[in-house]
Image (cartoon, rainbow, N blue to C red; front, side, top):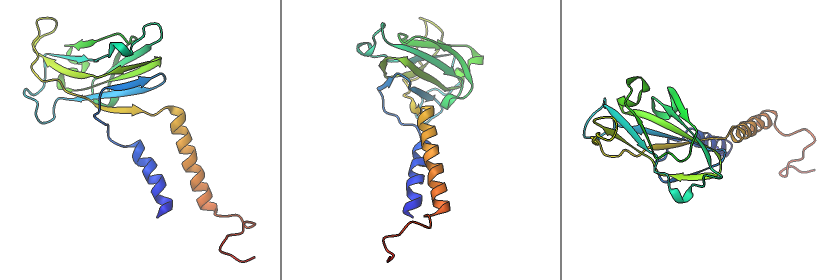
Length: 185
């Protein structure tokens, strides 16, 4: 049982559902996907919407333009599915989209933030509006995202290599020249 518990816990960490805690600090080399779901219970007006805005909630005190470099990538579905365009900048406060082919207007969307250098803290939310631009009125409350930190490729590779080594050792068992402590010499 103990031999199975460790790998199962490691696997559970890989497939764990997103967390909902914000604000979140994102450091260099990390990617975080923020998924927004307007189809959940409690939303006053159901989708589709004429206009969607994502406010990044960038904490200005965490931003240094001389050091920080970021890329935002936009997706038409939750969890980073249906990729769209991207923007390379940390200093953006609001993204807005009213194009039907963006996939945003159905109320299920996501953005990924990759910090290339430095570190920033953001507290994002998405809001549906009745029109594009300054004349638009909010028609939904702000929706907080579910958050998924994308594992670094080397961390994932190391974990998989460790699991593979454990399976090989388990399969082949102890070597013949190994003396077990519970055996007499």
